[in-house]
Amino acid sequence: KAGVTQTPRYLIKTRGQQVTLSCSPISGHRSVSWYQQTPGQGLQFLFEYFSETQRNKGNFPGRFSGRQFSNSRSEMNVSTLELGDSALYLCASSVKSGNYNEQFFGPGTRLTVL
Amino acid sequence: DAKTTQPPSMDCAEGRAANLPCNHSTISGNEYVYWYRQIHSQGPQYIIHGLKNNETNEMASLIITEDRKSSTLILPHATLRDTAVYYCIVRVSGSGNTGKLIFGQGTTLQVKP
Image 1: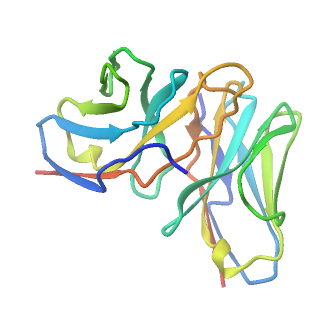
Image 2: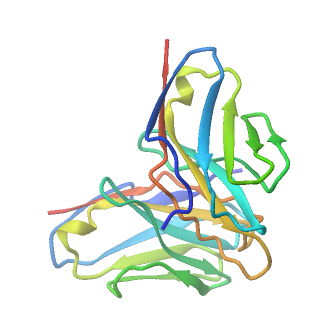
């Protein structure tokens, strides 16, 4: 079974631009969560989608948004990029939402903002 | 904020057991203890989880104290490939809860030859 895939793996943008990252969950998984990882703040939860609905959102500004499609694939968008948005963005999928479900992480997208 | 406390780093000799402690003194009765690890530049990997009984799988064992205020992850025979950051996480159980994981700073385990 293929794992969680994220595209692109690496991305370089400049301040003020916007970026869209994509995540394809494991086949049959309906829940997708997004995380941001930086050296200073560590791993922080961004949001979770289940059946095309946002179920939970972390403490990030409105410039960070996401969506999920009917095939469970998810995208996250960051508008008006700032230098501090440089990070590893990880997505994780699970069969369904909730505590009992092990989350499988993708390899991440490394975003660099210049 | 993370509800767990872990030592920032630990060393272990290859072939020996690695015992990684975690303090979760404010854990509630319906909260599970989860362990993930992250090998450099990869996504975190699920290891094991438990509520109050000790658990074992092919990767590790999880020992939870009787009062549930602390736990220990045991890698029985550490290899160089076990060098990683290990995260201890508590999660609320029950329906309606989401997939949100709150990561702390974790323990960097260095396995040495």
